[in-house]
Length: 325
Image (cartoon, one colour):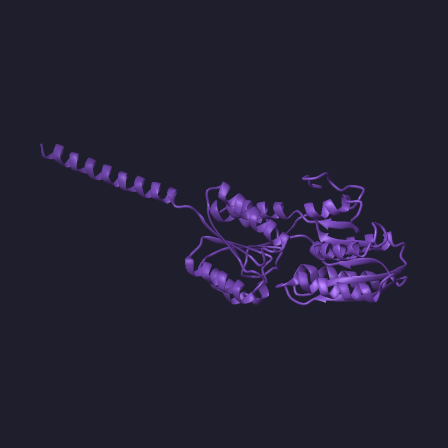
């Protein structure tokens, strides 16, 4: 009788333990993976395209997403990263982050065991890797294309932006290519001063520059497509027709493709970057490496994942709503 009683007690204890473990497992399974996403400036189409793609792909997996917009403010940017660290998110994806100016916050995240993936930012020892394109190659491709369209002669204007690692790289290659093609003369250039209010900065600077050199330039090189849109509007308003001045940029997007197709627009070409795809890649790799804990080396060699680009002009511009990849 005593043996039976002990057996029943053991069975009850085992059952209770199993129920507790099952409940704990169920509670763990119901706790969503918490992802913090920070975009440096959502008013920039490219930043928004990456961040919105990350948000959509992560939610498909049932993750809890906190999506923040730094509005082009570096102090707000680092504060948002710090807030996500304090909130104890499971991981972060930073879109177009200025990692060199946020190293202390990134180091704090790493110390707390919060892995970080960046997109179109820069490499840092405090992040797993950066997902980007080769902006040196993109800068060389669009510059060489533009010079060829000019038959390597004539005047040119340039619209630059030096405060972003990607656009700065494109500008450095632009300088190198121009130094080897002395038949093309750079008549003047405007450097975008800051990310906040950048549209008006570009508009004012290029209205002045294009008036000063009116009738002297055959093309305008821009560091990114958004700048080209503003200059396109300025020149169209002055009555210039497609082909009279060639405008190029880098980024690609439906608005860019629309302008390339438009018989009135002066936008001639872009190097298209698959921003939505990069956002999807970031979430997929976060799932494999951070959630599933598979070895990073199985998917990423080194500190950067490079994604191919496509040069788009009138010969291969996609139809409305379509993409060139």
